[in-house]
Amino acid sequence: AANTAGILSRECYEAWLRSRKGPVATPEDSFRRTITAHVTGTKKRRPFPEAVERDLLPRLRARAVWPCFRGHTDAQGREVTIGRSGFRAMGFHERRNERSSSISSATKQSSRGPPTSPIATSATHQASGSALHSQSGARSATAPAYSPTGAEGVPDSVAALHASQQQQQQQQQQQ
Image (cartoon, rainbow, N blue to C red; front, side, top):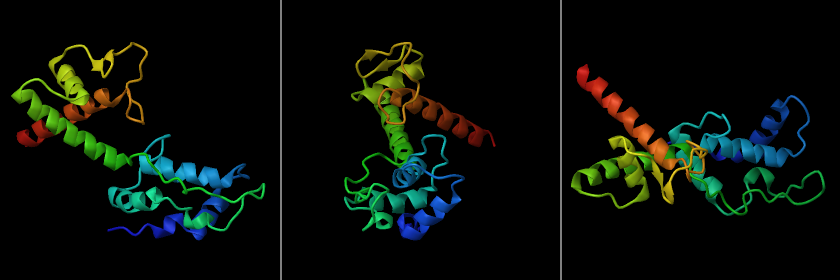
């Protein structure tokens, strides 16, 4: 198990700040965005390894100011409160694992009868070659194929993950 207490430490924040090429306009918020982007795997950031994410998420979700900002003020003299509301988004691996369990549920459901969840419905439609449908009906041509929040793009990414897993299984069976 990973120990991620140091990631939210003052020492880590200051080392990160020193590593920036130039002055950062809002360093506290920039550090928060950097950490959360690595946790979620968004904004072209490489996600933390799964063990690190698993240990870090409870620390981020705690409704308390991050240790690196406790008792500190920003450039305007205001108390830094980053972390007070907790982190509500899903981590990269957490989301991936949930989707793979949704895929296995969708696969099991499709063999038993009509699916009951919107994700299962979409995965089943795409797997059978039917038109894609979102939770609200037919997906528009301008809708994104993937959304990091998991809203509109979940069915497409679930189906893509499912297809990828099937290819891996077929390759393993051939070996």
